[in-house]
Length: 162
Ligand SMILES: [Zn+2]
Image 1 (tube, rainbow, N blue to C red):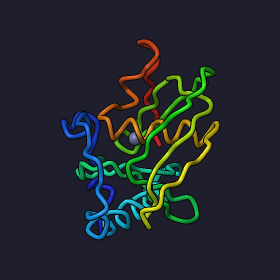
Image 2: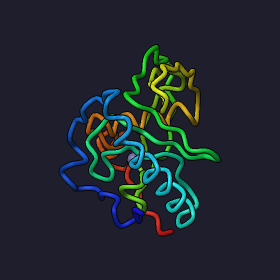
Image 3: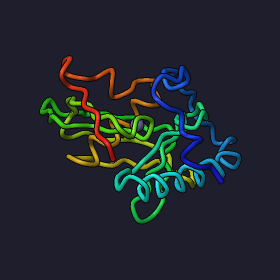
């Protein structure tokens, strides 16, 4: 089982790499990774009281895979955002790769997301607010973009002890 020590931390060069698409053939070998990631979300939430999703590159698996675990684990393979709203929202974002840092940034309030599920069926979700900013954060990870790169200005980083 993976532990929180397996999560790559801010500054690790792998967090800045672009991840490769997942192929249908890779699905069986990635299912244990889905379980690992789902377990890590629970561990993180138990320790820090927050955390809903994690991206595969955060444990060094450089594949386009995101796992959300709020009640029930859900895997998103090759997720793509489209129809992102012009309307933005501003928030303090956090990340399992820097649990004590908050970053002020902007995200689209609404967007749509296309992805393949664990049965390799295509799904399209309409996202708003919390889920919208969450998935923008996670898909950024697949492109090697961290919240720190989206800080609004030099006063948009805040350390928090928790
Ligand atoms: Zn993150």
